[in-house]
Length: 268
Image 1 (cartoon, helix red, strand yellow):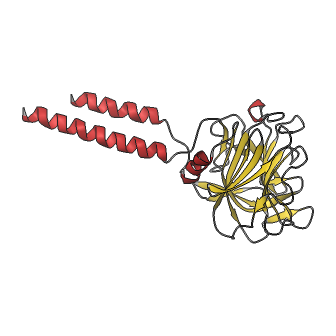
Image 2 (cartoon, rainbow, N blue to C red; image 1 turned 90 degrees about the vertical axis):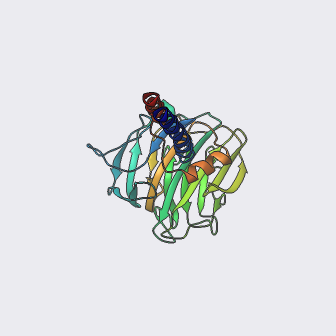
Image 3 (spheres, rainbow, N blue to C red; image 1 turned 120 degrees about the vertical axis):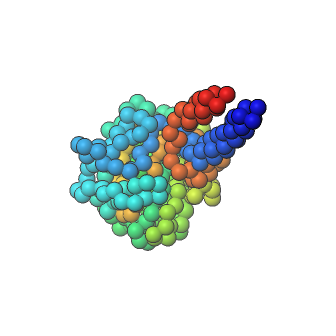
């Protein structure tokens, strides 16, 4: 009887602990619905490969210099000097031409007040862009006094020259998110602070899927970039806040739950 009671107590304890662990585990992870590419920028693999850990859009080091891996917001991060590029050839999962929705996010840590090496003074510090900014871009543009951190979307470079947040303080991590919906494009800073701008037409990328991290045709970002994600849908503010609070992506939570139930059965 005593042994049986102890087993029941042990089972109850495991159930309670399992529920708590799983709940907190899920709450601490990024949104996965619609996630097509995730570059944690934790490592450079053989052949100068920068892995996409959820899709097949692996990047490769390019540019006049090379990105380095340093301590980041979550794990490692890419250190960019304004010339280094992670070039992603792209697949159909990054084909947003003619589409009405997408979301792009990244953690950034600017080196200084003007984190840019560009072809024009102050322009432009590309964080993430598609079709060499002829599609969309999350970037720093020093020409926009007080609204330097911007999100532009083609056609017409919608949002260029004023749709942005003030420059970020050097040495601090901030989470930038650009969202395209059927009618608008939105920009978030650290999970909130939403800016909204009307959009005249579906996304235009001139038929290509090539994507760049850290540098594009009109310039590169100087500082650290981490946890770059692209979704094929428009994330809500709640989901963006969840990603802001996340510590990376879940690692097989189903297996964890199965393991807990297996442990309980052994005690029965």
